Image 1: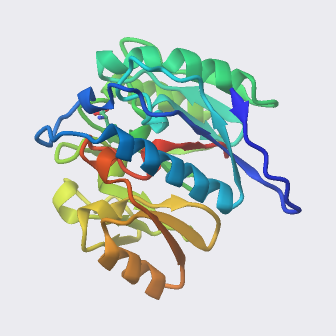
Image 2 (image 1 turned 120 degrees about the horizontal axis):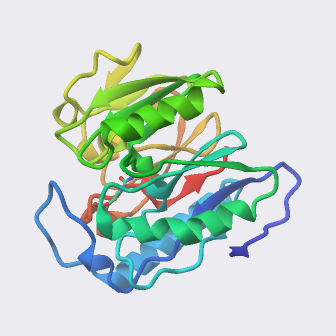
Length: 264
Ligand code: CIR
């Protein structure tokens, strides 16, 4: 693992990232038709994504590359952090299970982190896990099964979290359909969700690519450049919006959230 330090006065935070595989274009597809991926462009977009994190006060820790695992760049699916607890996922797609090993090594190298894991027959993808304060919404998707949800509930119950399962059939992961603003408002696209009624505060956004926001701080959101109307909406709500072009990853059903795991 390589740690890129940019010395600054304020406390910096850590995000795990993983360089795109050379066979990125062969990644899993569930809801989209396959379109050719420009890997050179994907590499550039990934560099810009990492640069945006660094510019906003994050240190990126690079997990060892997995040149043969096409979806390994979507590192969010392999581990979820709850403060100092890391829950290693057991990805629902067989092609993605080998991604976890190197991520585990990187997580073990972070000081002060304890580790739990989802084990077979339980499956869970990190993209299905949305934390909003003490509530953890988990997508019951094609990737995350009932046993995976039960295991997560057990792991988190002792830490005081409530796990709320959310049926997901219209999009790959819960976070392909909904994420949350710093104030806890869940934002999502109604076409991608079975139900919005599980969320106490819900705001519909105008573009499917606009549902994914990464909270860079209490006032700053990272979003896809493919959702300009959502960016305007959120900026009118008082947030600073930073956009990055992730079009090559969107072709593979990825989004801004899945390209990193924030340690928090
Ligand atoms: C997959 O199907 O697993 C990848 N092609 C995309 C994963 C995107 N991950 C995410 O939204 N958390």
